[in-house]
Image 1 (tube, rainbow, N blue to C red):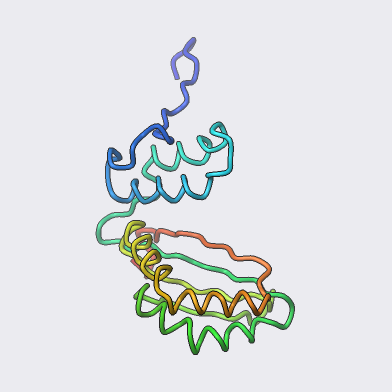
Image 2: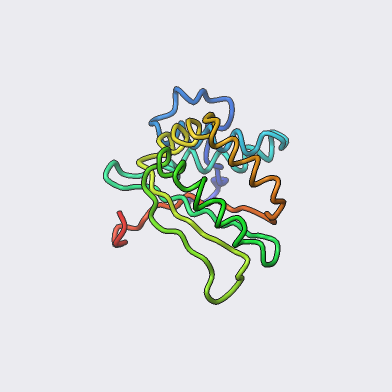
Amino acid sequence: MPHGHAHQPRKSFCFKQSPTRLANKGQQGAYRIVKRRTAGLPDTLRKVFCGPIIASGGFTAPRDQMLYEIRTYTFKPLRGADWLALYKSEGLPLQQEFLGELIGFFTTEIGDISQIVHIWAYKSLDDRIERRDRMAADSRWQEFGRKVKALDIFVSMESRIMRPTDFSPLK
């Protein structure tokens, strides 16, 4: 940086920018996710989350590269098996129908045994949003959700969207 020039923060699209005017569908999907997930925050905090992600294109991936959602569920002690049995019989067939590409489904061998992790592949954030929205609107998925809620076994759920590196075996 030349001497005497103050650092200028990166301009952000934030929530003044229409999602349809963003550069590509990946940025549009990122915009919608960040806007929805930060809805209760003051605008100043929303900009912290939104600006760098969208301005940098951080959620976009090359056309030949998948995005992977890694979901981690943490259950009340000794209750994960209850959910897993219900999920295997009712939830999994629906998610395979709507979400498509299941990469893996894991229980913990060593570590926090109250966690289950599953990984799904998507072509883009828009692909993920469209698939999950269709599933959420399905009455069978809604009924499954009611059954899960009645079990009262969840402690937390974490979802991360990951992009593979150029040397990853998964592309």
